[in-house]
Length: 86
Image: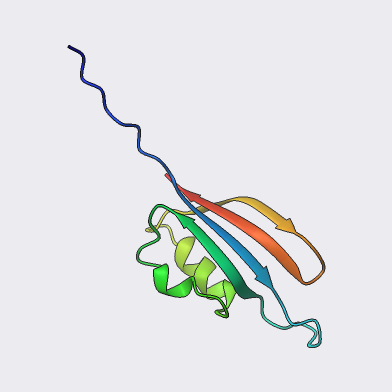
């Protein structure tokens, strides 16, 4: 009988962000996050209201291994990011 192994699934993080339209150059802030899989050790950075740059610095670190696979600005002050880790 052949042995069947499960294929490892990638970890995915979907981030919706926006910035304050009343303050030019304001920081991008996380509005909502959806995670499929595991985001450790960066879980603490993925909370609504936190700065997007801090979460991206953690997730895109070479040791963590996430990469941006989709990026879309939904308006002049908001957007969506999808990150994937294998």
